[in-house]
Image (tube, rainbow, N blue to C red; front, top):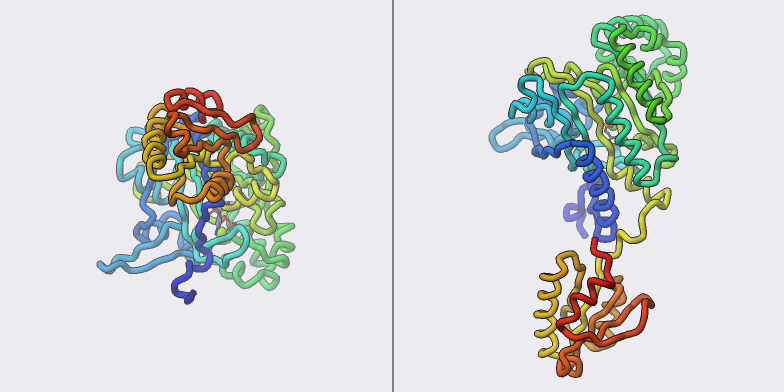
Length: 429
Ligand code: ATP
Ligand code: MG
């Protein structure tokens, strides 16, 4: 196939054999979020470029080098969204969802786009589920966000493989004081910093803490710590969060170098990391962004949220072999019919079964075929039972009911008793 007719590097098809696991994952999260009282919001995939520059920050990896930006036919600069928070805040402001200080607990799911080097767990189109909470400023809601992810890891069977890292970035004032101290320290070690960090020292010094460069990391060991510069308000907030995590029995480690890649965070930041996926170990990350809404032109409105990377969590489920067996079986019953008259009767009967058993997963054979070939297809479909209708059965107004996975003998069942019989055999989801 010529290259221009292939998918773009780093943008993946999710194939039929993979979608059951995606749907299981997405369904599990959606049910959990419903149960915690979060409401789904759906934003466009494309926004004005300015939105991301203003919210994420000009001097971040995302805005500096990862965005898919293009001019549309009107000459407007548009960008495929690299993350969800900016668009969510935009939508909330545009529709007055936080007007009068009313709280909002929102979530979204969908594709995000970043021009990064594709590798395992890092793609150019990837998917996130994100939560954003507005107008609740206490540590109780920060704790709820973490508690519900902990529950999710439990439901998915991956709790033992993830670790919670926490930090507090303080208010913008205390962060300012810390920034000064950090700049002073790093300036004294300028020659040992990598090129990126030297540049960031001038533009966005806190981001130096996030460096992946080993030599710079060595310098950072003795750097001033944010914890020593925290204002009282942030310290009390952070203590409140830790007390709640302790009460809920959720283990965590404080990582003073955790600053996150986006500019808008304040107070709480956290990441769930795993050592099972190599370099791409962060599966869920977020924090508080109390200044963002105002920075984007709204009234002062506190915010806190996180996003999880679906591809990485799917990889983790596969790596840990936590893929439930039953999710890939999509057919309960396979209907084989032989000859035109039987096919017509099978169609009518099938539609009647669907009326009576709305959750029945029934696949009707298509394309006719010999007894042997239809049976092969029935078996391959994964169905638990085959229904067989030929001239003999038709004459007697019965269907042969054949268990395919060794649950009993073949038997004849009258047309009008079929639905009741299937109802007893199949667990209705
Ligand atoms: P990283 O440090 O791995 O680049 P990030 O800090 O850029 O992550 P966020 O913007 O916080 O990531 O996004 C939240 C989550 O989305 C990440 O923890 C990760 O699970 C997932 N994610 C981010 N970028 C990608 C990507 N390019 N491919 C797949 N998943 C991603
Ligand atoms: Mg990144």
